[in-house]
Length: 444
Ligand code: MEV
Image (cartoon, rainbow, N blue to C red; front, side):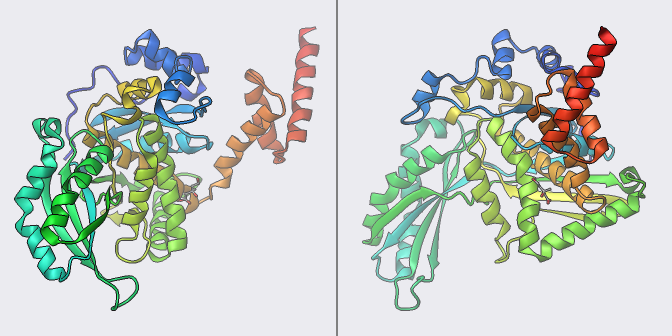
């Protein structure tokens, strides 16, 4: 069910040889392809990034700004549309891995993704209500009033087609045991449209509290969104022909078997599931930061969702189905394309132009696919040759830079270091000195 993309607008994420270009040429390539303005291009490079003045409007006690590397994940095809994915991350290998995985995924038609409507949960905690069943029934009987009151706090959201949609009441056992008062928790389900929604949810939850107290005769304590946004899930799946997995002198079947074993391990063991999911979040967080999202909220939601059956589980699984390796991921993704730092941070605005969407749902489908691609790259390596081989080359690059290599010397020192098998700063210094001396002798 591959859908045709009618919105390619001359954009492709298949930029072969991109990583070999000098940084400036990479930026020029994407700037031309996305027809970025001079300001957006400069923002991408960091020149027109967040100023201290802007930072001062965002947080308290600001004293400056903190920077991290911004790179591009390539080759990603989701629902037939090409995405170049801006990613902010300090860890080597993450971007190379996601781009590599997305390239292999293209061989099976890329990722097929979907996402729920943007329904978020606002929680209102009620105490001193008397009988729990009676109080629940009273709250449900006042559902329409509660919804109308909640919506009165956000007429613009309602005008945009969103707003409070439903009320649910949950009674939970008292943590102190049977002698404590059971917890009565009202859930306000809110369609937040293009917003992540934290502010508007909290406003509505606080706004309905007096009516909740009046209806139940109880006292309300907490009124806050839940980051377990399990009504707002994104899913992605990929089907890769086993034959296209062959690598490292191994057959496609052998590589697929390693990936399926990695998946079984994560399903059975929370110790492994945590690391499996960390790999997924490597991609998701990196994209979330670049796109101005609340990555702590995403993390909290993902891990709570991973524990929903009482054991911490992987967010993705891999199975063999009819000569294809099939990967599936599902997780809550409460994203926004309005509010937060989105309108303030120049690099976030430029990043969203690369992502070519103003839809939070579309963003969540891309993000889920990035997570699945990241996970594929990890389990493919882990289930076969291990990850140290690939990491060693990236590590060698950092060591070369630490040893003083710059420009074209970095590549040369890195290659020589990997060959020696001793990835140490002292060794890198020695190699750099030798290479420079040889070059000077040749020149002179
Ligand atoms: C490293 O940042 C992430 C991995 O550990 C993920 C995994 O083990 O699946 C490689």
